[in-house]
Image 1 (cartoon, rainbow, N blue to C red):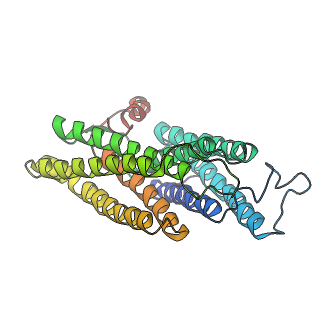
Image 2: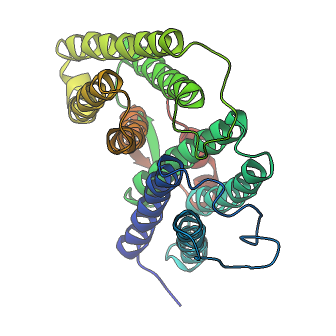
Image 3: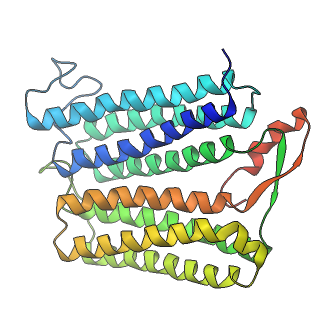
Length: 309
């Protein structure tokens, strides 16, 4: 079997879409207090593999079954990378990272159930999901680039460093957001333990990291306005990030002032996923396909593919 590069990119996009969707469905489990709807893992209970006898069990069961869809999507990316013509090592490695990450997250989800939704376990589950969004975004980006072409820097050193800092601050904002979630009211079950931190305090910390990142994005926009090269490379992904982050910030403040209604929290989780995608996409524009290289050197492309490099 042979798969063309355009078709492989479609498969990569589907894998990324599935990885993003399960973050939202996972949030739905927590927001409906269905986190312990299945009190065992991998079985739903000690007597049933599948149980939809209650609303909470059904919600949790659907989310677990959707994990199978995600698994199939990332396995398809691995298999397709082997059948892609020409075959590229960087795409194979990235797709395997998705498979390993999904397996690890499934185990971590089971651990979360076993420890009765301890906030640290749930936080780790979310953060690993965000790392998978980063890897999935890289796979989609790389799969759309020409074969046998090395990546070369596309921006100035100053802009490069600003984008690297921007990516780091975005990760910090997502991390502090999970701390707010760990202290907040939507634990996934009424009896689940919460982080012993004051919600107003950790919310302010999260808000500061968000505002700092937005301020840096404004500085970066000003910076690239003085360089045609930087503007051509970064303007579109940077403005996409700013638009998504602005909407995410508005939703964040509204949900806080409205006592965190579940629907707005779910939208905020989806927005955080979009922000992580946009930040990774921005970092990936620091370099672009440049000169043709030999097949022997294609294996070195992965070392140049990390966001911020």
